Amino acid sequence: MNMNKIAYSVFIAFVASLLTLISVSALSSSEREEADDEGLDPITLDELAEHDGAESCWKAIHGRVYDITDYVPDHPTDDEVILEWCGREATEGWDNKRPGVPHSPRAEGMLDEYLIGRLVDEEGEPVESEAATEANGNANGEADSDQARLSPAEDERLHRALLGLPLDGRYRGVFGDGGEMQVNVQFDLRDGQLSNISYRHLAYRDVDYRRLDEDDDLYPVWVQHQQLAEGLEGQPLTAIFALHEPERLAEDIDGYSGATLRGNKVHSAFRDALNRGVYSWP
Image 1 (cartoon, helix red, strand yellow):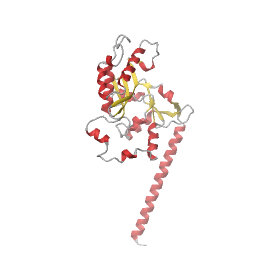
Image 2 (tube, rainbow, N blue to C red):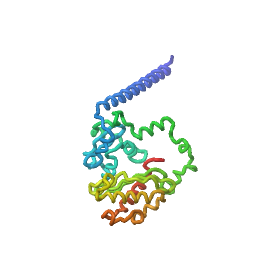
Image 3 (cartoon, one colour):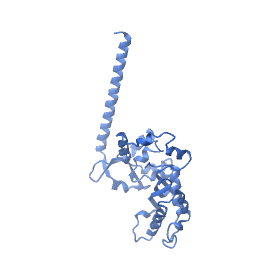
Image 4 (cartoon, helix red, strand yellow):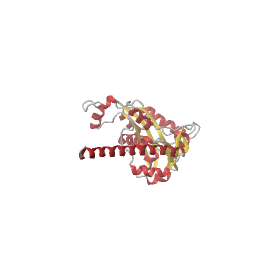
């Protein structure tokens, strides 16, 4: 055996050993993380939902729960951006700081400082995030292969993007003032028409309109906002400009509730959603 063959054999053996060590290390790391999670306090979705504001902000990412209350004032964006994820499963937002771009390893390292528990269901079983479920589906070959095979001449998403037209998909947007998120709206857009419009947050001066009882004096405000959403349902996207004249969509906008309905806030949330781009694909 000449020297070249010996050197080649040694190199192959070295690479094989290195790969083995990496695999063992990764497996051990994964096992350690699972073992560490078992030692964390179990937190249910209902318990998580109780911490949904700046006073106490918890969020779940990849099955772990973090109390980031102390970090909210230091977050580099407007408060309402991070407050949108308080009290809920937030993996999708974490993995998409921008569409398709996750938070940095540095941010991930900072997140560890706020770890307080693991997310479980009512039976105490781990709750898997929607993002993880979708990733597993894609790994199993359930991705939209037809869309992936489209050529530039056939890809309607590409065409609409290049023409500056809104893409079909689900959108989320917020309106905030003075560091307080007041409106968080979600809607679907398909072929230029609005559907599935809902409020993920609707509050003003510490009043959460979505949680008011029917006999509450301000409950009519919640009813009026629902009328705005119902009036836009099935309408073309351009109908959001009617929110500047909310009397076109809701009944008795002043006398019914004793307060003027601020449709312009809802309009701003819609515009914010469009500026952010598609939140998730249909």
